[in-house]
Length: 173
Image (cartoon, rainbow, N blue to C red; front, side, top):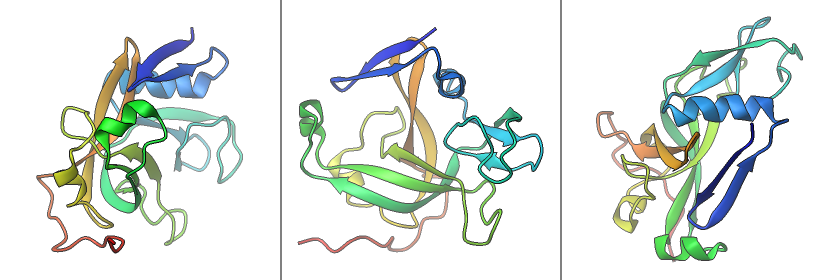
């Protein structure tokens, strides 16, 4: 069954034929973070897909994963293309290296998950929080409930983790 929702004025839908994403977002709707673990090589993968990017096996098992990591990269949005996001600028989109499976299958690789910077309740983070976050900031996964059966994984600053003294940020004009 397809899932439909609306996030800050944007229509979202996942079609019936998109089995991997339906399963992924079903876990997210329960505020559980699960990824596919290849039954052959044992590596986790993101985003959800029909085949393992490492060994091409089609077999995988959904596995609970701790949603913690550090900011690998980010973009800070000051000009919202979607009108409903304008009231939330500046906001941040984060690319996060998960702690799980870091440095596998090679020392330069990591599971990297994209999501907005949010507060603990899943709403977009205010400007004062945006200004504090940069590369190396420790974050934890939170969820934004969009519709019945649909929650988006987002990132909040992990207040329980040791943070870098000064996370790296792009220079500001």
